[in-house]
Length: 269
Image 1 (tube, one colour):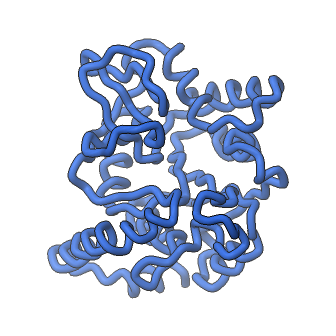
Image 2: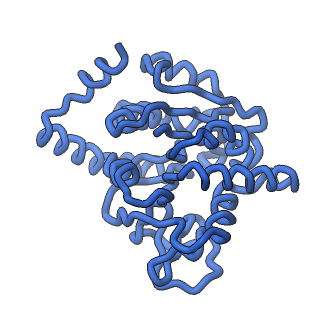
């Protein structure tokens, strides 16, 4: 299974002077970029390849890949229209999603405990999302709404009756047929000129028109993660989320005897 990651955006909401910020996938927490953390986690869980959709400061991302000696694991696909909506980056990655096998689709700007990836990779569901019930309501979180055990809405704005809802983490496991349907829907958006739309809308359309229980979720409530959209998110990630992620990593090393540095060195040779 390979992972496809959206990492092309400018990250304009981090501040008024956008050029002061690196691509969000290069933000550093605990001495490691988000990209390095993604690579280490995905390798540990058997992912064969990471493909990044890049745009803004793509040269800096390429340099980080080289600095990490990860050229054997990471490829990039350039989206020249990266200032437009994320739906355009998804379209740029269409050949990577339509790969004939299961694939992970991921946001790049997420700091998370590797247990989230473990739960996604090991899920019994072919098409799976991650749901966190512990979130602050509002217009910003992309929400998963569940009724009678089935996802009935996937959007920032709620328009369906539901038993409960949670925030979507931005990590998805997709079967080959569903990935192809999502790309077909993405093509329709591009043809309609809807190039500023978020990529989640294409997933939502396929989800709501598929047979019941085609899409499922794993509940990761209580596990640490955060999406980095605003400057305040960087502060919270450093203060609240990173210590919990590091504590989880330390526990994993203590219980498994795992040495990440040795393992990553062995994989890069």
